[in-house]
Amino acid sequence: MASDETQTTLDRILQELKSSDAARCLLAIQDLGSLKYSSPAILSELESLAVQHTDEEVRKKALQSLGSAVHKYVRSRTNRLDPGHRAIVLRQIEQWEQDGLIETERAEVIRSRYNFDVKP
Image (cartoon, rainbow, N blue to C red; front, side, top):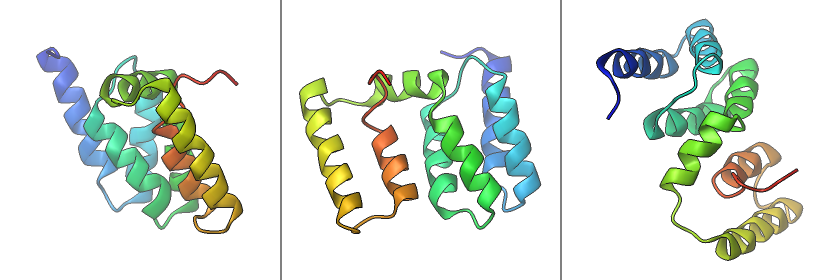
């Protein structure tokens, strides 16, 4: 369980990420970069921002944050697929992207759900 201070910080950042104001979202994403913890709720909000926010910079920074070690760790704690099944899903995402069924930006967000432990 998170300490009261940690939970307060996470709650504040989540509220800022939910803001429609790009500047507030960007500051929250920047704040996340200085933390060594996050939450599944923040991870989910970052995924939404990366594909749906109207501001290109917010989308870009949210996608970058999804690739951080902290968010990879959070994803590893919530994902229930074994590595073999995740590899199959990753190949499918790549194929869907090549076939034009999903845009590159969406493919990257979806991929982040499954490649959290893949070495570059």
